[in-house]
Image 1: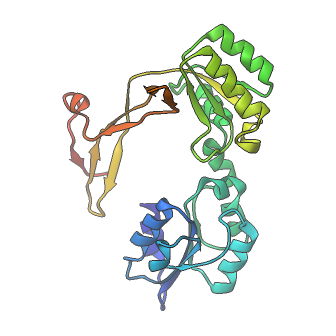
Image 2: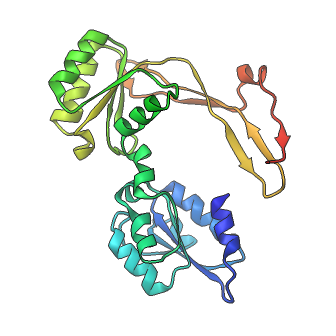
Image 3: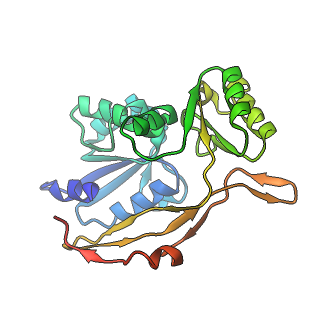
Length: 264
């Protein structure tokens, strides 16, 4: 909704130039939707990909090249920049653009830390008593292993920083958990993201997420799907996390009713 508001607020004599930062499926979807606005005349995407190139002009600038992206936005007179990936947000792209007076959609570096650091996120949740798994944070692998031995398995070991969705390892056995610590902290499989780790209690069961669908009208639709995650073994091959998504959840829909309402 904020993005749509930013687009509608631009009262320009000419049409808008929009820059989308990133090069994956998420950014493809953003470009596709933004291209439908009559207020937009030209879309750039940095770095983009072959699919995005059918809808926007791809620019050979990496998503984490913040200064180069800001220079490009200034040089091209970009009216709005939309950031897809977490990495540039955690690196402070919004702060740099705002410093230059450039309009950009996304959280500042300090706000993005809740996504960029699992240690920060868990500590924040604990501080404000927001329900979450029992956890402990470590910057020493030996201390982490001692804690894991005391807790037992199954247990979850996570790299603190961004790891392209691969830094969370669900460990069914003690050996797997100890090996996960070595992979993350000693071998640095995920680079600097593994300087610290979070060791979490393993939770099994359905997880409720509320998905809201803004319609642009005075009402919105809410659907409560259920996601489940856990270990899955198939012929000696163990996946990190097995996801299943059901929407609407047959179990939860017996308790909740999907309604439309007028936002206050």
